[in-house]
Length: 250
Image (cartoon, rainbow, N blue to C red; front, side):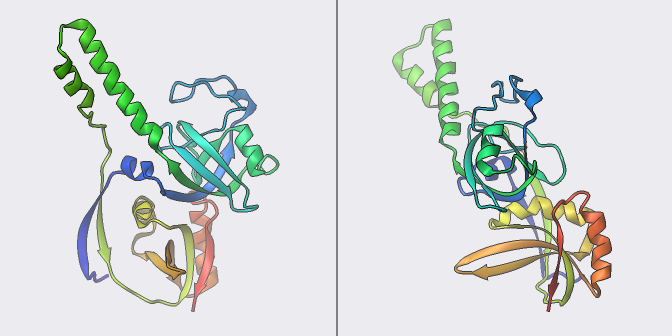
């Protein structure tokens, strides 16, 4: 496939996922009763009564708004655990959050997740710096000026940086496609795009849909000349991309 240009995109998933306004869509599940009282990845004990959730990369302490796309019910939860580690699922919620979302009966729900507050992340970082400065002050004699410098000194978080080589060619091809997912933030699609290209190669493309001053980026596989051909690929894709479906572009 001839490309109009090639560029290198550098994305830090930790920074992207911490940004207010970060949006992700996928399936949600909720904690089983056996998890009550267990220690989460953040060190906090899990409780069904707390409005908490698990995500693979959104920093601990972030507040996320979760919307059940099947009934439009919403809930706000705080990230304090890592997971879920099941293909197609993007978040595990506590039982109290699941009740608010109306997903107790179904177990699994299609949801939209949005980061709405990351102030606690900054606050925790500042507290850690202050604790470090105070500990240094106890161990050796320091004047107020040097202590102030240590307190204001930033600590650089460890970041995982991914590199994406992107070949872009504008195209308008009619036919059948398998849609793997959709995102409002174009940065959110790079990881999924790279993963899909490993499996489906050059048939992977992105469709940009503009409406009401908003844009939606859809990850597609295709085109296929018949729905039957698209259905075969869908059967293969849904093992990893649960909820994928066929669309026709005319």
